[in-house]
Image (cartoon, rainbow, N blue to C red; front, side, top):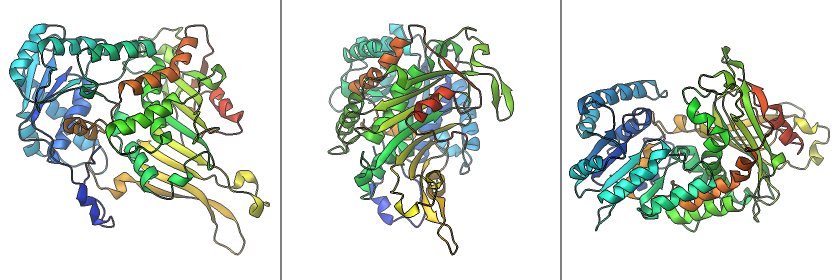
Length: 510
């Protein structure tokens, strides 16, 4: 997990230059399904940023594999247009596109037209790759994962020899339930070694997510407090304002639980709750994450809320309900929101609830982790109503902004003792003056250098599915579905979930 660091404020100690990342090795980056949206919006901009930072080898090349009847020149032009839009629209630090960087990168792009099931496609690829290092990125529908890996094995493209590596990056969804996740892992491992498989979760490319470990384990004043003696509860929120958009066919068979909880949400929880690894070796970190997920109690029916958005308004614009979206069954019971109360059965977290929620068409786009510390004794402030005392909260902001906020009480200036809530905030964009990024840069770079710390291992994937498997089984039978207006904080039942424990959610729209 080597850090890719841009210039920082002069107030930062110059020791930051001691860990300058090394350039990635020479090789080929093959993108299956490379003509699609993921490649245009995220992968090409991420590769451009790595090239701009001088982290790509001069003998690095890209091969796009797809079925579209286009030329390599057409594809390069399409990527260029997407990249210009990305650079000019992302963030306040965005700068103009560096044509010299793009010229070098685009000249390395080749195109192979072919079917993912056709052996001839892989024969053509083999001729272009030869004996070079290679990363295969599967930017395709999940139904093609097994097929492509099988073909890589049959063609010999997955075989490593000497110092030549062959690695495969796989996007979510990694299975649709526990059984399918286990079956997919078994299928992949018939062709690949676990060390060759990089299961990617783009949330782990966010600086704040990576910084969770640094905050906890490199600062002496955080780690002693990070336990059941000092923490009352933890809230994890992954809220979106967008609806189902053009993904109705996918979302109808998926829903919020499958789409977000076993991957994104479980990764955030694991990073927050894991024990300190013995080192930052990939397997040491992933061992501790898996232990946390395996320690989660079997979730109970009354600790889960499933919701679906109805008509409402987003940014004062009216929007239709989920059942009225194009391609959605008008009687659909697919959830667009889920909230859960999870308990971790280990020494550090016994008795500390982790409340998680994720949903579409909510009041704001926000992903954050809120660590609520226990309140101080009230003896000194017996004349102050308890609800007027500012709770001590550490907020880890993941998106749309990345940073950390500490909330605590302080005396309001004046001759009498009156308390007021204050916040100290660290914002990545203000402190580290970086240009726009996709969140994929670190992940792609780590795969190039063989660092799997931020990628999920098979047992980690399966542990996440085990947490939600009971919920998936309840959904087969008629189950309650709580509706909420688009643009709201979510269903009332989710508020009740915390209210019965005398707690409440932080506002999403605040």
